[in-house]
Length: 566
Ligand code: PEP
Ligand code: MG
Image 1 (cartoon, rainbow, N blue to C red):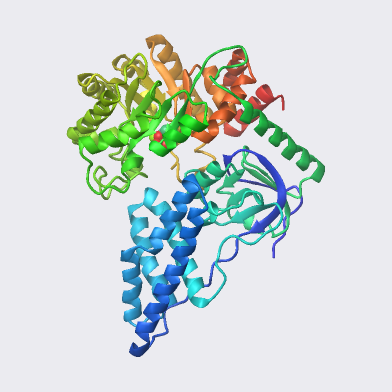
Image 2: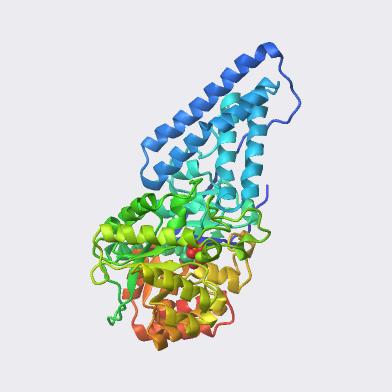
């Protein structure tokens, strides 16, 4: 067993802010997977098949019953995992293996491997779903062997849970009275672990790297979900103080009320990022969001095999729009492709999909895909009686790189009476803002992709997380340039990437001159409370320091010093 020296700090990707000091506990081990070899006689195959069906049914029932005791995204995740165990295609593949003579545990492994290979070949969101597949495989294999269910250990004290990657079902079943922090070796900021951790509001660090395996069961650890650090053997007094301070901050955040402004009254619109009607309802009822700054329409259609009709699309969009009947909603046209494969709008077999035909580029070759979507957005907006004055419905295109693309998109919007904007997420769009902005009413900076393309680093790669960091001064310089051009052309500039969800970076963005910030619902109060604690001049000073920093770490440190006095 390896051990870790006191004071060792591990660094991962910060996902949910908050500091917790508790014992480390590792997730219960996955079962040893059987190898090929044993063959069962023909006479036993029927019974073996029955044994498999029973085991799969038991696992599915357990997950379903947990889903009935969970809420929101957690319940959805558990239901989705249960439905994978019930998937006819997967069950059929296992049964075929048993009928071919494999014992049930091996047939489960072999069938699942086939599915994993298929999902990985599709890549993107589908590849992230392979964690779910491995999870159901392990649960069914353990059940077949009469072994305890792999996953969350039974605990009766506060612990920080460590895992290579948490399965969605594990994360969704977490009791947050005991599991007060989460650390995963793998995963990314968009993984299931991250999504559920945000919903449960459990401080969380992902992609902490292989070295975290050296942390032993029972080691005292200090997890900082804002810095993305895990410290082993921290001084207990200091660690407890840090935890206490973070709880006070959480209380201040809980008490914050909008609208968002700095201490001296400089207003910034604070909006929500959503992907469907449920998320919009949460934003409307549980946050102080003034509207929606990014509705990711492509996420509504990840499982659609054919393009929904204009009427069907309009119904989907209405579910979001109706949650904010008196405020702005920014709808993004389909951002299909790359890590978001939409069956009816994604090029197959691209060598380099992140640099390929994604976002607006798909519609350049298939204009009707775009016009049907715009028709549906206009229809939804009209049927709800929305008006530009009281409840603007704005539309923006992802992946705009040239003025010509912006002009084309703006023309299609104008034909339908829609207010047009573009995402600034390709560096060229920022550099050419003076040519792009005259065609548009607003722009919204997508810092996730802007960082990926500026730093030439895949946003899904855990190894490159140090580069795909929106604190990189190169990214901030492009944002500064966009804001300056926005002022010159009187074009509203918002930020809707993850950068807007980081309270300190939100102050920097405000200092750079952005008019609106749009973030996941769970991040809104934290951003609002931090803005309320500083004045505009301090935001500008922080912005200058970050722009002139040598790198992302340095930028963060300088800004922390200015904004938090650290
Ligand atoms: C972005 O790129 O910052 C963005 C908001 O869009 P997405 O994350 O959906 O690509
Ligand atoms: Mg993007």
